Length: 194
Ligand SMILES: CCCCCCCCCCCCCC(=O)SCCNC(=O)CCNC(=O)[C@H](O)C(C)(C)COP(=O)(O)OP(=O)(O)OC[C@H]1O[C@@H](n2cnc3c(N)ncnc32)[C@H](O)[C@@H]1OP(=O)(O)O
Image 1: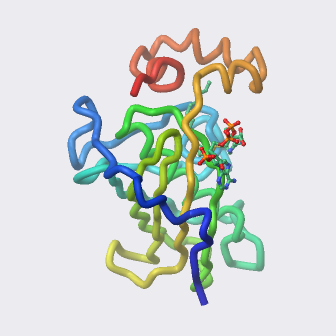
Image 2: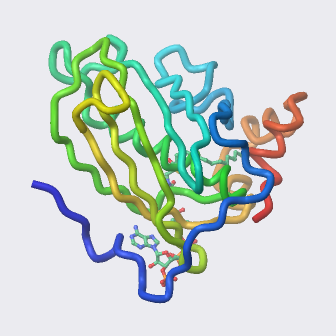
């Protein structure tokens, strides 16, 4: 059984999402937005190390392989980890819009158990934008891009200013991002303009 709540249905006056002219070309790897991100950062030994690639439109594909550290039931991925993978793929879409946004709501259907060692093939797409609200959907298929759907999600992201992170994050990590010698990553983390 699956379904989407009214809060995740775009209003009638919602706009079609517009891919930013400087968005990575279809097929290009997006790379990590932050080294310490649990979803995509290389600096988290037990993180998901999710690798996202731009697709056509405001969409992407991503892969993540379930590791022993991601178990809930013996030999199976923890549901929260799978939700995190969907959240990360959905959050990465904002780089194609060149918008900073955070997850406001994430509704997840868990359709199949996902064993350790499985590569989850994710697809995510922005479906509509209404003011600061960004509506998006994602699916995760097991084993292959056309494999059976194991998880899916509907999400609402809410656009925020960079002040959101400065106000709520810890100064040490914010400073570390600002000191990052990788200019593109610094821009992605802190200076994204719509
Ligand atoms: C320094 C490092 C930077 C890194 C940058 C890259 C980040 C990438 C990270 C990627 C990692 C993966 C991603 C992650 O994990 S992001 C991390 C997980 N998410 C969060 O931490 C977000 C926490 N929540 C908040 O900060 C606030 O609640 C936000 C900012 C979301 C809204 O508070 P704000 O005061 O700003 O706005 P508002 O309350 O006026 O709402 C505005 C509109 O939105 C609608 N609404 C709001 N919530 C909901 C809801 N739950 N269901 C339905 N609708 C909702 C609301 O009705 C209103 O609609 P309307 O009345 O206008 O029609």
